[in-house]
Length: 310
Image (cartoon, rainbow, N blue to C red; front, side, top):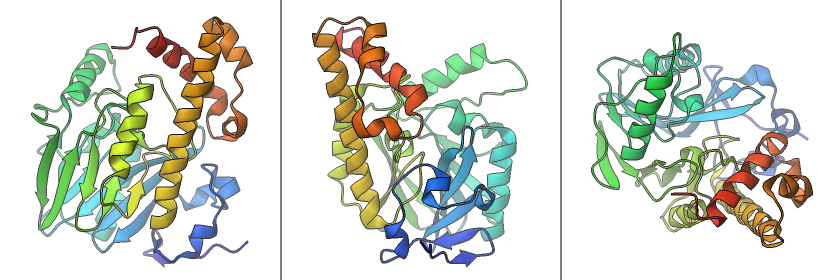
């Protein structure tokens, strides 16, 4: 199969609405997708001033950040999992624009998105949900060098905020709990783009270590109700517009299927350990991280079913 790529400055390429990349295999595995690891990190051009940033993290799938370039500065949503990886991202961004990075949105408070935040400019303006700020405060108390946890000074006071990124309007939205207790998404109304952070794990088995399973499904429904052309995941590959909506719906289906299967086993009265052994994941057993995250999902859905998830 031939994969069409338009490269800019050796690190930037465009996925357009009519791109032949629509025909690529739908998978989070780079090798199965036909993408060499040597192509990462890379900036994916979404519009003239908006990019997705894909970097490979262990064990071999992408962590995605959003980059919005305004007339007087740059906004980043979600960083990378180490200071070095975040610094590399900043270097790549400045190959596209020399403007300063002025805004940062904490879409997910997990370390694979925040552990490199000490590389960000010291005077940057943070946007974070109250729940994620609280979690980062807890992480900071338990962290030891060399990892430094950056805790934003203030949190959002409502479920939405508007940031003027030098002429580009950015809406920061809390549409409900999902992968974490404080998930926030970044909407670009004019461009009809929604960066979903870890609310959308493209072809990655639903990771539920700190999740709210049933609420996660409803949060995706809220996202699907928005006037969006392109949904950008926090992990997995950035898709062309039509494929991005299709894959978000597929991911929602995976969540529903996981909850349904665990509920079936719970109803049978199985212990958590027995449920882990007997769970039938169907097609989802082939998704990225299924071997690591399936047992975690069983435990979390049991916690929800037993009324222990607050």
